[in-house]
Length: 334
Ligand code: GLU
Image 1 (cartoon, rainbow, N blue to C red):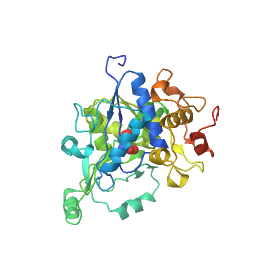
Image 2: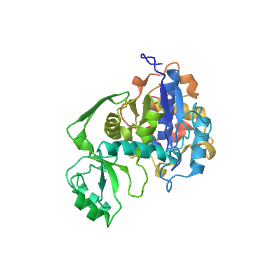
Image 3: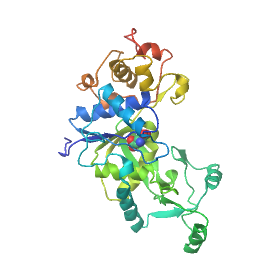
Image 4: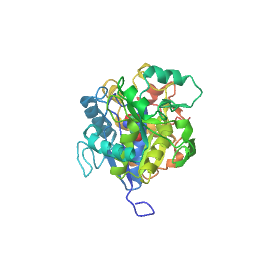
C-alpha cells in the first residue's frame, strides 16, 4: 500500500520481438523488486501490437525465462486476471475508444508526411530522441481542403498535438528530477498509417486501465515519458510514478547486441549452462544493489532493496563478464 492507501501495482511490458538480454533482465528484476518489496501486485503485459515483428514463440520463451530467473506475476496472459486480455494485440478496441476521446477534444490531426519528408525534417535543428527527430508540425496547420487533397494520395497517420508551451516535470525514481519541454518532444504518432496503434497511446491506455501505480522500465524510454504525461493530462488520469533503469552497455560502450557475445538469457542458460541465481547475483551487482557477485534468488534481495541505490548512469559490462557470470570469481567491485 502507498501512504494514500492505494495498492501498489507494477508491470513487466516486454515486446516479444526478440530474446531477453541482460539489459531487459535487469529491468525486469528491478521492476519486480520495487513492487514486491512494497507488497504490491505485478502484471505481465505483452506489447505485441506490431504483428510483423512479434512472434508467439518468443512470447512463450520470455515468460519461461522470467520465471526461470525467479520472477512472478499475479496477472498475465498465462494466469489471466481482471484486466484480460494481457496481450496488446487483443486490446485494440480499447485503444480506438481512447483515440475517439482525444479526437473529440481536438488533440489529434492526420499527418500525410512520407518517410522522405520526415527524413528531410530530421536535418533541421530539432530535438532527437527515441522517437527520432521531433516532428516539426508540418501537417498540424493544414486546412480542410489541403487535407482532402492529400488524402486522395496517402492514408494518414494520426498525431497527438503536444502543448508546446508546457514543460513536463517528474521525479524519476532512479534518474531523479527530470524535465522536458513540450516543444522538444514534438507531435507524436498515436496511430500509424498502416492502422497499428502506436506504443505511446497503447501503453498509457493500458497502464490507466490496469491501475498501474509504478512504472519501472529501461532508460531508453525516459524521453517517452513527457509524451505519456501529456496523454495522461489529456485523458484526465493520474500518471504513475516512473523510474528508468540504467542501460546495460557492451564493453565497447555501445548498446548490447549479438556482437557482444552470449548476452541473451537463452544462450547463457542453454549453451553456457549459467545458473539463474548467478545471473540474478550478477545483475544485482551490476545495478549497484549488491557489493559483490554471488548466487542469489530475487527473493533474497527483497529485504534490502532500495531503489535509490540503483546506479543512475548506464552500466558497462566488464571485459571479463562471461567469466564473472559463469562462476569462480566473487568479491569483485567496480
Ligand atoms: N514494450 C516496451 C519494451 O519492450 C516497454 C514499454 C514500457 O515499459 O513502457 O521496451
